[in-house]
Image (cartoon, rainbow, N blue to C red; front, side, top):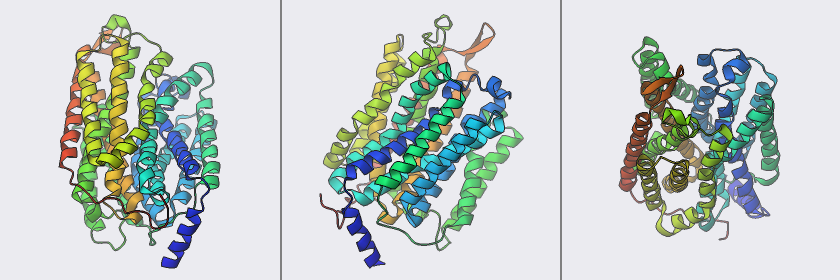
Length: 480
């Protein structure tokens, strides 16, 4: 086994250009994050386009978030076991199949199935970060991880105006054909430029553990994402959350006792990993808070007193720079991570998030106030999303990088789902009727900003409690 690992490292050291590999992995991350904003411009028209109720069409968005949360930690474990490149190619292939199904479908069922398969591709982001740990020397790793982490915001930011343009000027099926094209390009590029894996963790897949995690997360995330619609205390809602908690507890008991668990909870319980993952919930909440509130504020009619009356395409261009800021800052994030460490970088990023929402709470009378606040959020998310994988990689064995970063992505998904449900409920509850349409009041948006500030402060405090971890060991065969 040691000889096989050494031969793999030697093959890896002959990779002609690791910069191209990083760029290809970043491309897969962009394609994955684009799936979350792909149908946002169509949400209001989906009931008409698919001849379905608005309650049913909300699943076009919900199913993608749900599958992404479930598939990400599982695909991370599969990558550690069977090879990260192989799993990335599989996930990109699922994106292609799902996109084609949705593109060829005119019914709600086909689109939901396609969107579910698209959601699984989110796992390429933590897997890409794990590949980077394998192939890059320490001095280059921080910048590459920052770039890969930035794709989670950049893909959606760039994709929003593109999706809006296609939705306004082309048949809606073209969005899914575009997604399929991205998937094909991703598969070809990964096969051509991403090398075979250096480190594997041989074993069997914990099928029972995977099923248990899927059932538990399905119950909990459905309650979070649909609880406001069904009723937080409705029999269905309570059954889901109670059942999800019970299954999760049973799953945890099983994971601690099985020989080859899906996730090593003893590693996940290390203080640095645990605190980072809990803080990730706050960061996910803070990130998605801007996605929920800012587009609505920009697009609501001026007469309502809550909005700026901009069209969808203009609003998406105002929001887009936040993602671009994340990408531009990735070299700086890498340098800061090497210079001061990932923990202070996380603290600064969380502080920027709090500052951004305080700013928009005080100044939001003009559209450029939203632009400034969103750019500051881009700084905060760029720093924190770059820091979290580095903190985790300094705290877990190399052969558990994929699964551990997948778990961190799961916690972020819990934060984004919670933001969608909680802020959606606030905006719905604090609304007034204007020309027969319920419009959120200005006070409703202020409450949302306060909630985002609280989430950011919690993440900031947790970042201060994260213990210092050992430095990443230098790769045994790759030069600086």
